[in-house]
Length: 305
Image (cartoon, rainbow, N blue to C red; front, side, top):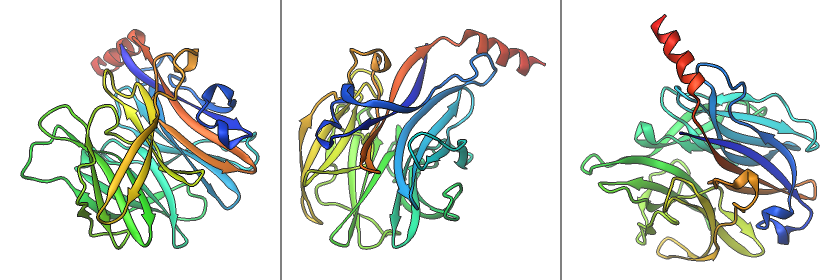
């Protein structure tokens, strides 16, 4: 069975309800396996990030074929009804996902997952359309003196009181998510290890699941639950202390993706929220499983030919 992902965006009138997924109204979706019968179908559309810029709401997300690494896509809307044709905004020789997009001092940046490169990389938008990003700086590189099972995953960045906090996940010799925290005086670095790092060694909350959220005077971190399978659900924690010397958090809500409804039956691993034109817009993804026997056969025939 092949693990696939799909995306949906939900609209909420009330900020109080954003973690109650069942009360949301679907306004947009991106399905996987379209078209279904081809040699390299798109099996993953995932990691949706929302970003408002110049009066438009932009949706950035990962798109991955069955036999090709992930690229990063973008579509936008001005009215939550009409959406632009999705375009590829970033492609590299290695796999890309988790396109965290943010604005800093009038410029728009992206920190995607680039763990296959062994680094955390910063990209900058080439113009105001946000339809293309170019490499700017390497923020972190994996240690050479330790065994690495999985490179930097799902990196998150947050600015507070002039300091930049960079959170990322690694797996060392064991299949356990190690959540590390770094701090810098500048966006471009250098980044040093925070004294409280690693924040946790846990497959339940040791990997971020979207942007940190400022919600009702609280700073929230969403994490994906990988205890039994990769990305089974999403938990919400409150960051209660964050400074160059302190970090503390506590779990507020668990398993906010309702697996008792068809869309989330197999779970999911992403949650992002933004206020746009007096609406609260939530972006999530969800898993599904397929055998894709026909696609495998077509791919094998093409290779033979």
